[in-house]
Image (cartoon, rainbow, N blue to C red; front, side):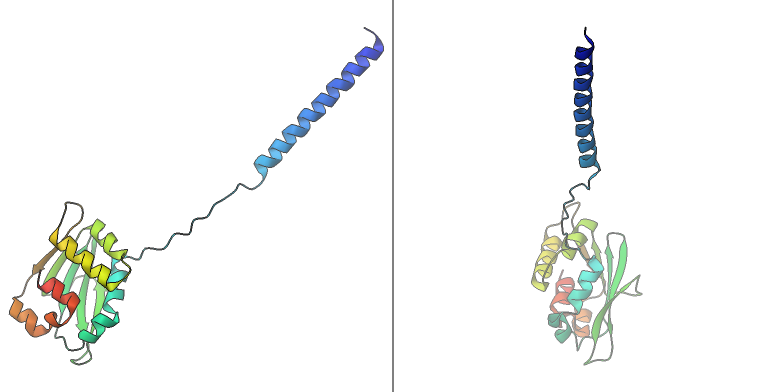
Length: 173
């Protein structure tokens, strides 16, 4: 082979190698560039305690709860222990929710973890009460609401349970 042919072959090889290196560098830059990230906005689901606190502070419940007596309802929602208690004096009572256990409750309510999550997802008072009634009527192994009234209906009536719709649901179960 002549010297000129070898020289041109080298030049061609160098050009091909340069093109390959450029392509490799472009690929590296593409891989190094920031990946495309899609962000999904997910609405925060409140806990059962937060949702129940919202329900108790709603206008429907607060207006009718002003004249109740000493209300004590114990809840076990999944692994969480809560209780509702009336606070204040007659004519200005409020229903408050607290963590833990209460002594001598009037009603004991046990809610499965799945049912508590479903109740926490509700958007309105009506939706909450409808779903609560449904879980009380049709319980399945994974989703249930079990209510035990520890006092007689006459005692519950005298304390004012039947004056508040939400409390009436538990009292009449």
